[in-house]
Image 1 (cartoon, one colour):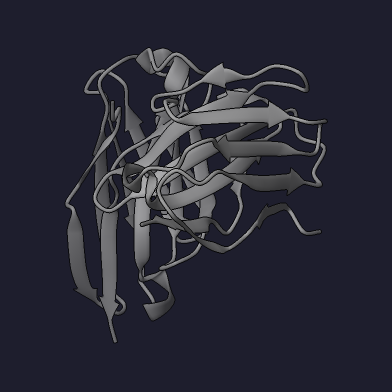
Image 2 (cartoon, chains in turn brown, cyan):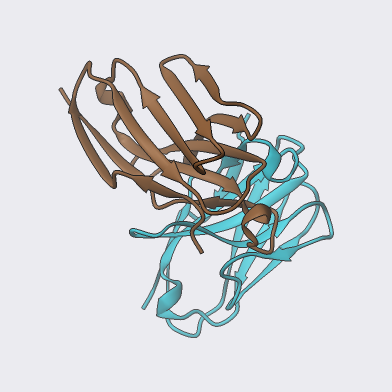
Length: 115
Length: 113
């Protein structure tokens, strides 16, 4: 079953604005990761945040993690047309009782950056 | 570096036919995975291999078999394809289980008619 749940399902903003996506999960985790998927392509890793971290930055990306609320957020600042993609959060499946030691993905947020 | 390479990119099968999806990685990773992606469902784990010679079932293993041929290669076999297996299949690898970032192949778009 899906461990992570992204919100919103779809987001459309103007180029230059900031985009915020949220992820909620159900059980304890060791780490949470964010991935980007361009249409028709494979997933690309963006950032990994461990359960003992609260915030992490990578370029224009900022990820927060609140383990007490079982939630994470991904902020993309100064958005560009090239940021148009689907964004997924993923948690370690073992923690979710998935029965195998892979990642469990949410359904994703589809982000559209209007030029 | 090629990263993770999947073949084929596209495939159409008739119900009941069999096929093997191939995956190879050149990053010397220990762990490899097969996922399927369906519209509105995100990615779901089919099978996982922690290391050469070991495999484990994921969330949706029914109808599939896997082989970890060596450290580089991890194949997914559909013995008797069904329309419900129409999906996009992704192979991925990581250095060590779910504690490290995963690298994904470009996907195989499979249609079963």
